[in-house]
Image (cartoon, rainbow, N blue to C red; front, top):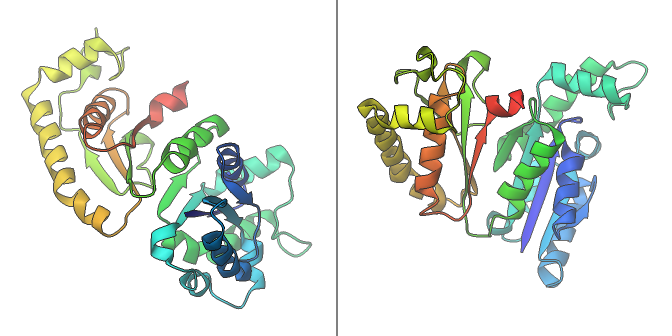
Length: 286
């Protein structure tokens, strides 16, 4: 039995995430009051038809209950084995832009509270849930399609005892992903960007792949990163860790990090069932 709690600041994509899970066979409840969670968990445990349940929790619930969210979640039966908390967020300018574009009302705004103030207050209310999250997704630069795809691959298709691993390439000049568990810097490797015949290709394409695979430093760093992950990943699995995000960064996120993320993902797919790759800067450009 799985109980997935979806939370995050308004505008970050909670509704889209819940709809994906509903489409994929989860029994979904939107905006469930916090005090009802233990009763729901007990009902799920006694009803084999409810093998997969997802609920969304937002700041309105947290502001209306005197019980702390951590205390409520601790009441869930066998919570460490069945509960997953997925937390979605985006930076403040993006959230402001999304509300302006949709002209939706933020749930915490009123005549005395502006949109910017409501977004800041919401972050404080949700901080306990954010700290408990098994999986955090920064949706700042994600399209709805990409968010739906990640929820499908990383949450819906993850089996109960599997760890879902994401290798994400990125460019340091556009910021480090805030939802990464580990960040590896490959900017010291030979850069195909300075090879004029390779500049317009990416790490997904054969010319760049052939160039990088021929560089001894690239193979050595790939082996070191792989050994590091293989050494420490079992400890996370033993502690019931459900998700792992490993970010690989180069300067622009087009060549070296893309190649390295693809190579590592290919190696770890031989050991784990749910291994995904995301190329942040390439997806921004498409």
